[in-house]
Length: 141
Image (cartoon, rainbow, N blue to C red; front, side):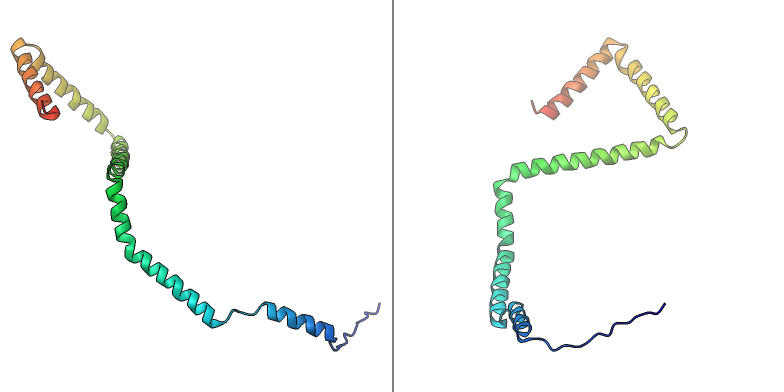
């Protein structure tokens, strides 16, 4: 078992191969530096003009769409606040004996409120006056 090795021979490239290589090289040439610098300056000028006018664009956009922007912002803040409150409540639910303590406090307040305001007619009238004044303050009438 003899291994046979082939010897590679170097051959001179033909003229047609040299011409093809020269054509390929001319296709991959970079554009002149002058054109590139002009394009770069033009893009830089457009970018700087846009950045200078950006506060005016944003101010005009806010003035034109103030009500919808404020509405969307309030909805987003409400959603985030709700998520935070639910997270805090969930964290409080994980603390042992805290839920029964809060339930006991709530039941105690309900009993006190019922005895204080709902048993006697004079106290119910007092509660009615307090609720009417609160309604007038909130609704403005």
